[in-house]
Image (cartoon, rainbow, N blue to C red; front, side, top):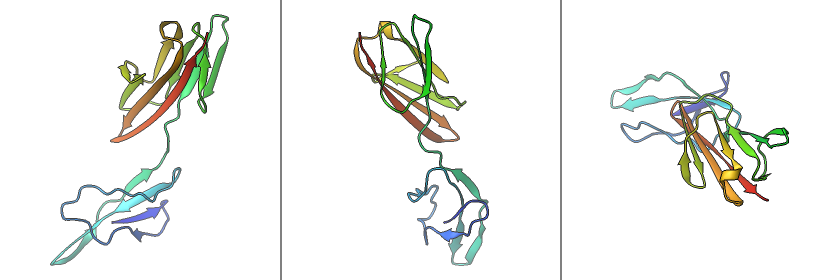
Length: 154
């Protein structure tokens, strides 16, 4: 198993040998924001095979979500979530992932709720206090997630 950083990087051996019939490899030494290329070469009693096709992998990090808060005074606040969010019972909280993925799963306080690219929560229908919203998305077999903690205060 070999890896290189970027299209013009030099190949480096990651593993001298993998178990026979291996179908995956966990590379724990990658950096968010970089692109890597991987290839494998088989070996048996007749010698080495040619290299496999290269596989490109970009490490994007945590899924970015966008939060919009609307209230009855027609004020709208939109931001990329960095910290906890405080809302009132009169607010509507809309959370979006901003990209199209193959699959979406949203959870509010541990219970699955329906949603795709975005979901809206009518805060008047929730109890005051701390709530947790999580989203899991899948694309090309990779799963990304993020979570938001929000407080409903009177």
